[in-house]
Image (cartoon, rainbow, N blue to C red):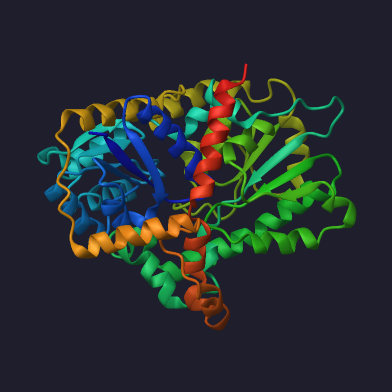
Length: 447
């Protein structure tokens, strides 16, 4: 009998390519993979009768209940987080505990040993869950042969240095949303993590910092020394930055582009220097790619600024200093003294990236699938109906949670439906998966 797995993909821009890489690794080991948006988990069961479903989290009540349904059917459950660096000890303890509050999880893959140890301390040690440290699969694309997927063209001599600025103000997205939306967002953490007890203050802080970041960006854009790519965090609204670009002089606009859709690895590989906004994973990725980094600092709130990372970056808190600082850091060897500390940090928090993390995950999961008998296929009528819905929408190249009236609802009630629109916008479609699979296959076949 054919063995197969479902990989649930949370965000098209951030997660699709690594999901395709993981699928390739599993298929090379005899496990066919189906990639679907995270919100399609119910429909996947009867649509594919999978041996395994890979989640990015199982930390909410409906997913906990669903995990027990999967266990009853004999379907393996695995968790591979999208974000696995938790610098604050309180946040680490809470996130490690909430993942298994009654859930059935067969395999949990951690980015680092600190997360593994926290999971075990929180209670997974007494569960049947196998907890593995795998590193960060999406970082594999900084290494050969996977880096070929981006096929970066050679750059002409004499060009301006290319800067990549990665903003990181995801909570500012909620500044103009209904208070109830923010309350729901923060509800799991508000009473358990002291840094998140005042959602309104956190949102206001990020909104202020986002505005301050524009002063830095304007310096880079108007000086005429650089080409600048502006990359918002996946949770941010790009329209805010589009308005900023429109405010620049015509000459500056020719040197700046807003890119919210390209793979972040491709953008980092193509830049000469990366600029992050306080603590951001993109700085660590830039270290892997051997790119110099500058970290913009603002109010240094401990939720967003961590000295453990900042000590390995060059910091800038004054917009007037930024152009000169960037020119200095673009000089050969300017950040050589930071290299050893960066390697130690990557070893501690990312299990020393080497391009093999997806392979590690695939090896464990393939072995698990092949070692177990095929799961039961006794689906309920509701599960079969949801499976039929998934298949029908796939034929129309639509995600499972597509709502034909959502655009109208958002126009009529924007504060209520903006978040749902965001969820739909980030969802993968069958055509996205097919294109990403072709891209990876073509890259690996190239000489």
